[in-house]
Image (cartoon, rainbow over all chains, first blue to last red; front, top):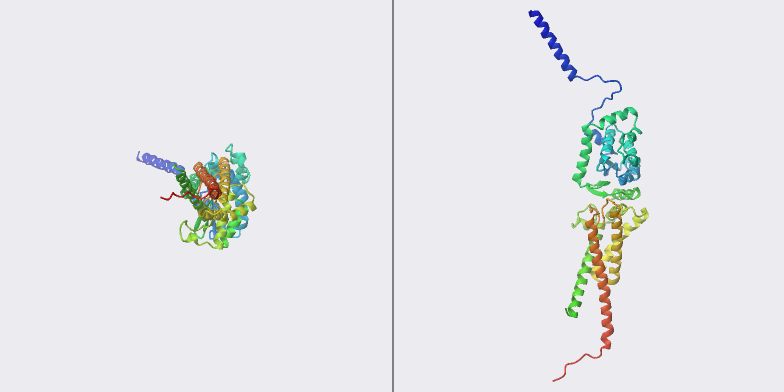
Length: 217
Length: 187
């Protein structure tokens, strides 16, 4: 009788261990299921910076993926700026999300998720380039998928739903609000510790001359 | 109200109007020409050097550019001339020299500014006015109302200046033909 009780106790113990391990341990991945990498807010922020942080001029750009003037600024001013001034170490560019249009927050989630994987530039460029296609429907995914590999897209899709990415977008927005941003695009140009707000679209030839004047000061 | 009182009142109103407009234009020029990295109304803001001027004017150029109305060369030309023009207008208004023509120019300039601001406001452009140099100066309905007030003052000064000049001219013409002044009969 005592032996039987011992066997029952042993079986119950084993069952408890098995149940606990099945809950606590990593679940086996089903075929086709994507592993979501752990990302941090710093990783996302880093993915949205261009150039070296000790450059003489720092530009913080607050943009909204759905705003037409932000599209103009990104494609016609910031892209050439990256090619000419950021790559030569004169300007450090930091992109910030400031979404307030209906679908721009969703777009920002995808862009920030891509930033964590080091793919912010192509995604942001695609979102701005095809702004007219998704800004009425909110169908951001096909636009993003066109510039990422299927494997990367699956990760970005999964990351875009995570609280870290949502937090990164909200942090950018809150930071902008604290600085007094109330319209997009808004750039803050910092030189010698002085931060100057530039509101609205600025064409590249004019921004370029301003940067040159600052560098020669 | 006697004609003399009316004349005196008109004279004082014209003086106050032109001084207010002059101060406004001097402040607008100062805002655009002062070093962008200096706080307004400080000694540092008066230390204007060729380099600081270059930066200030380019900052103003970016604000003009945000209206998206002019090509780059137009933006550059305007950003490098308008602050000096405002400075000159301000000095002329304060001194009262060539008042009729300067006030007329002021009215025309403010009309152009008002038209540009209304156009941008109606187009829903979310930009800074840039009227008094760098800094957040959002283009709002109240900003437009302020511009209407400036324009009204400029128009009043212009009309007053022409009226006063005409009155002076008439006085010059009528005084010689009036004959010898009446003398009191000797007791």
